[in-house]
Length: 51
Image 1 (cartoon, rainbow, N blue to C red):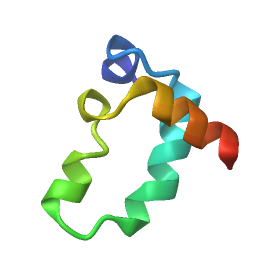
Image 2 (image 1 turned 90 degrees about the horizontal axis):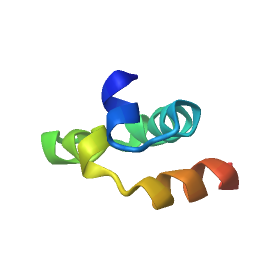
Image 3 (image 1 turned 45 degrees about the vertical axis):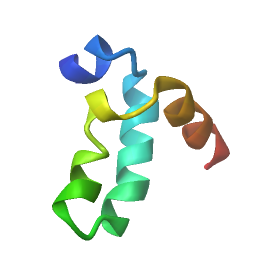
């Protein structure tokens, strides 16, 4: 969670996004795209609100 906060993510919103998207990941690139430093902070917040 420290890395999540360091990159500006709200931990709950980040985890909510990850748990939703992780089952869809099929290859290394898709898994890496979910790392905190590869995600846009605003888009994670929007996606977490949408669920």
